[in-house]
Image (cartoon, rainbow over all chains, first blue to last red; front, side, top):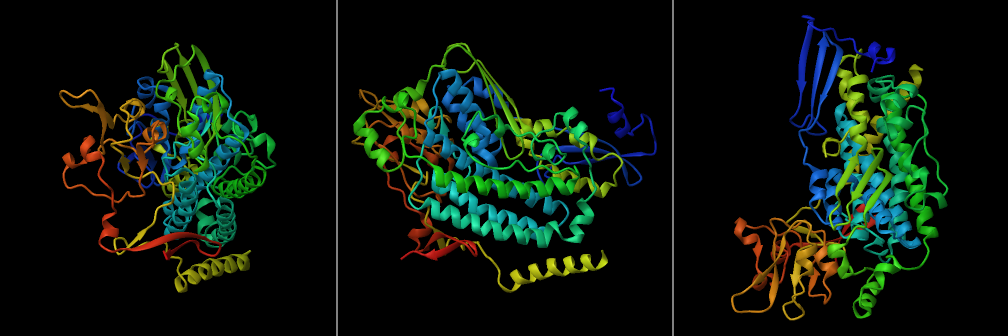
Amino acid sequence: MSSSVMEARLLEKEGDEEVYEVFIGPQHPASGHMRLIVRLEGDVIVGVDPDIGWVHRTMEKLAESKEALKAIPLLERMTIIDSQNVTIGYVRALEKLLGVEPPPRARYLRTLLSEINRIASHLYGMGLAGIFVNHSTMFMWCFGDREVWIQLAEELTGARLTHSYSVPGGVRRDLPQGFKEKALKAIRYMEKRLDEYHRIFFDNPQVRARYEGVGVLKPHEARRLGVVGPNLRASGVRYDARLLGDYGVYDELEFEIPVREEGDAMSRLLLRGDEIRQSMNIIRQVLDKIPEGPILAEKYLRLIPPKLREPALKEGRIKFPGIFANLKLPKGEAVARAEMGHGEIFYHVTSDGSKKPYRVRVVTPSFRNVILFRYLPPGHRFMDLPAIYGSLDYFPPEADR
Amino acid sequence: MFRGKVRRHVEAIATGLKYLVKPNRITVYYPEEAIVLSERYRGMIHYDWDKCISCGLCAMICPADAMKMYRKKGEKKARPGINYQRCIFCGYCVDICPTNALSFTRVHDVAFEKLDEMLYPPEKFTSEWRSPAEERGARRLRVVFDEERGLKHVPEQ
């Protein structure tokens, strides 16, 4: 860490009596359970220490103590607002260990829910970015419109947030009747609303004054610090785990990865709006192109007795084969990465051949982005801190795991 | 520059005013009104005594250890019971049940007075679920997607 770039941003000097320390949190300062130790010289921030770990729940250790399938509902609780994207990486890693591939229809359905979740997650982040600068209208609107996408997810999966939708080999539910019409209505509604978001929030001069030119992250710094997700792409770096083609059907669809060059708080916010548009574009294509076929891999489907399987399939759901209760993981290691609303999530699952994984390593996007709290605010006024915090879409339970 | 700013200020206020006159309310006045949950909603779980073959798969797959097998003295068959203090409504037990003895209900707005009441041994597990709001005659509302308003809640026919 001896780079001149970073030293230039750390203005704090030891033993400086002019410096005030301000503790923000760990009660809920607006977005989560974390503490920022802010050092101020007058009204100017000279240093910020993100003090994380208040919602640490030993997720990785708990995952070692459970049979492989049982960790899905557990890991979902890291980022409850984005539960499909947070678990798809784990499911992919299990699939690689088990040597099973999901059928095409299941891959389309996973992509569908991933994008619905991404929109809901971005709306959540944008709403909080609004309330951080006291724009409570934006907060209410985003959370209200998020309900539309949660309703869609509920009709697909049966749960509002904790979907537990993907399992090794496929998904648990097929498209319900009339889902396409509902989704298209939601998309058309959201497109109109995004224009209104621009009028009341993004183009609002009061909001621009707070967000524009604040917390600029340069591309080379973003790369050095290992930042991921919209925060990285708003700094002009085109990287997205969806491009790797490891999961979902992103290689079969036409969509853009929005990139912005400015790297300031405003561009990070605007980028989330761009991504919502692209996600809706993906959902449209998925609903048009989705092929017929099974939603669970043949390997598991044939283990379900036909008497049980056929009526369930007619209802658009699958039954689990009995083997799911104690799925034996072959010895080996597997890695998988997926793009969440907050950025890239990485899983490394090690198995010693038993039913429980020997080790589950999770690197979450918020954990990688939390470093920005240290490097972005110094040099800014204290009231720029909420703007920077809001623009990062940081989710403490995800970083702490 | 200055003109553009004024125009955008006015636009922001006008957009807000539009919703002041014609608000887009999504709040439902529970318990006078209650939303009918979607068809595949994973609510409270119902247990069918006669269909159960005591295989124990539900207790084995439960990620939260909410489901347990209970065996009475002198009886051969063990039967599942559920602890709603622990249940996370993932629905794994229902999906793995080989005889469809377990099924979802579309009831989720249940309240318990005591913690002990959340424990459902096999005999109690068979009880039927009813929404307390609907029992008191709440109007049932259906969720409809709408291009203009996002979600609308319309009375069920």
